[in-house]
Every structure is written in structure tokens, then in C-alpha cells.
Amino acid sequence: MNIENVQKVLLECYSKDLCYSKVPDDWDESNKCFGMCAITSLIINDYFGGNICKIYVDEISRYFNLIDNKIIDLTSSQFNHEIDYKDYQVIGKQKILTDDTTNEYNILKALLKQDDEKVYSCKSCIN
Image (cartoon, rainbow, N blue to C red; front, side):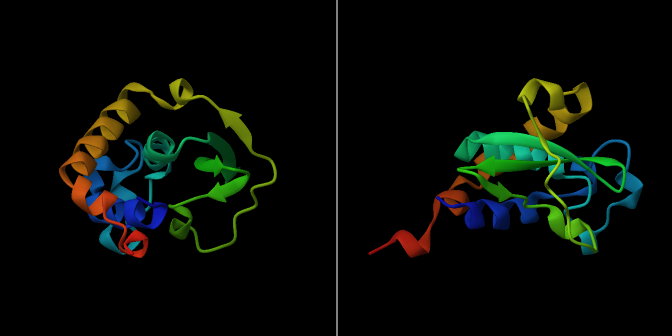
């Protein structure tokens, strides 16, 4: 398994129904990562460990992962500019898991379980 495989499957799973509950009307197929940073950072943390971090981008809370001192931000493409990660804070899962986010996260986790074969198929690891 690798992050690229998980990212591909996540993109297939993202939908308006999973978008952050305060902005679903701004989500569309052309920007599938919009409103997905919290649940994505939770999923990446489940699979790969590391830390979940929070910053503000355009005055909006933004979540990403820090794994082995490397920034992993699978939903950064929702922005049309570079993101400055220098003022991040490490946060615990419980701070992200509001009622809405918990529901969306559990749905996404269940969708990924259905696609486990895709998530775990790493062609580059086969000899």
C-alpha cells in the first residue's frame, strides 16, 4: 500500500455528500477535493500514522498530515495558490471528530473498505 493508491481511491469516493457540512453547495466534480481535508487527514492517519495538523488558508481551517517530517496534503489541489504550511499546529483526532465530521469520516472509511483491493494493490511493489 502507498499514499498514491489511497489518493486515487479517495478521489473516486469523494462526493458532495462527504463534503464538509457547511460548504456542500460549493463542491462539484471539477474540484472533488473541496471540503474533504478533515476526513482525508483522518483516513491518511489511519493508514500511515504520523500527525494531523491544522493551519488556516484564506481564513478557513485546513487539515493535512505530517508523516516522518514530510507534509502530506492530498486535498491541496482545491486551492488555486500555494499553501504556506509554516504556522501549523499538531492536533488530535478528537478535535476534528465533530458529529458531522465523524459521520462523513465513517462513510468514507466504509467506502474505502469496499475498495480495499485497490487501496492495497501497489504495482510498483511487485517483483
